Length: 64
Image 1: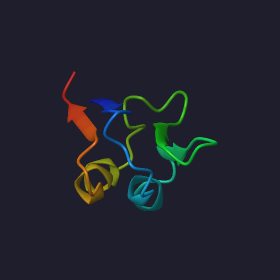
Image 2: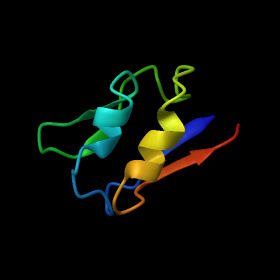
Image 3: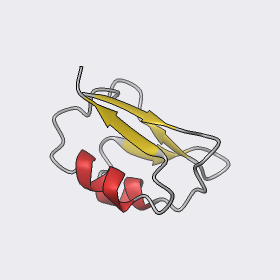
Image 4: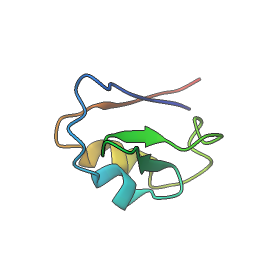
């Protein structure tokens, strides 16, 4: 699994960080980012739910 966040689309709602705090966080400006070392989802079962919860669909998950 490969997780990417489109920084041009992200509005910083933070729903991803609420759904999967072990994978997503927010940077100093409030925009979402993947925690270092968790770009593959880290086995967290909530990663897909986090992507679905993004109100602007800025998160893309692809199978590696």
